Length: 253
Length: 105
Image (cartoon, rainbow over all chains, first blue to last red; front, side, top):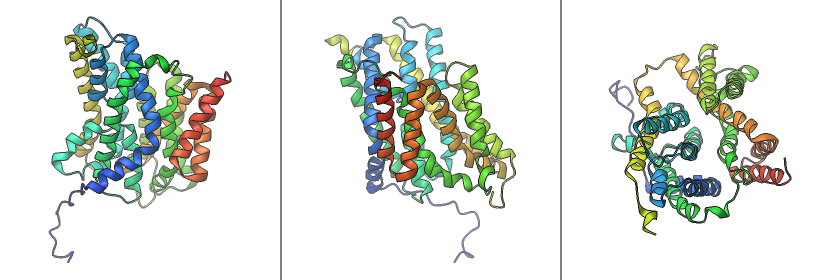
């Protein structure tokens, strides 16, 4: 059988099933309460900053990135110039640059998406379906519907909760008290445990396997102490990946 | 009331530009990996990348969030190791942060 197959047959594309879309929705359910409050907090901040409701909803629908949207409010203008548009764009890019790395880390799955869905589905790419997708794929799942179902769920919710947040924003009060700054890190930290297995796949054992993570953590902390903004994520993550590339691996690497 | 539904021209342009920047970030890494030739070091880098992203995000944000944030993250990690249930870990972590902040930490 395998002898008669041509040597360069491309792998078949991942399926996209209704069941997969539904599973994607189910997998992000635990994250939805936190994300709703986060989205509502953006709505509240947008109202406070002077965006119209339509502009706030458009931001959630088009930009669809919580941290970037919240920070962009600090740079919001009533009269836009080319310079202020460029400035806000650069800040949004800097905050979302972590998604470049996330895309690279999930490339082995995304590349199996049917071509016509691939670039469209990436519009829905965000921290939460990255986390859910990494885990699902690591556990052997292949249905690309999970990525799309999780993304559509997150996107719809994100757009909808902007509205009550905008209209009733004063009810939320101080976001710091409700720990809104901790939602994303909290979601991330729960993912660290299932990722442990992934790390041992480098073929290194014990302590050595943890060195890249340690470098990433320390570099992130150091960059955060030295620079404002969010560059610590990308610099820290890249330093961990680079360390892993330079360290010798086991035979399986 | 109609002011709610107005979209100003400048704001629209800014939002489209922000959306484009975000989309480029979403596709950038995937596109890059399409074009980089596979090699063992690259493979090792990618294996360490997800955990590196998480640690380089979580620890600095925890430091920014103060004692309450660090305790909450530790609680979430502990519950996750013990039960492997995201929702339990997530809600315990958030509750710890909120409770500590109510008490002024």
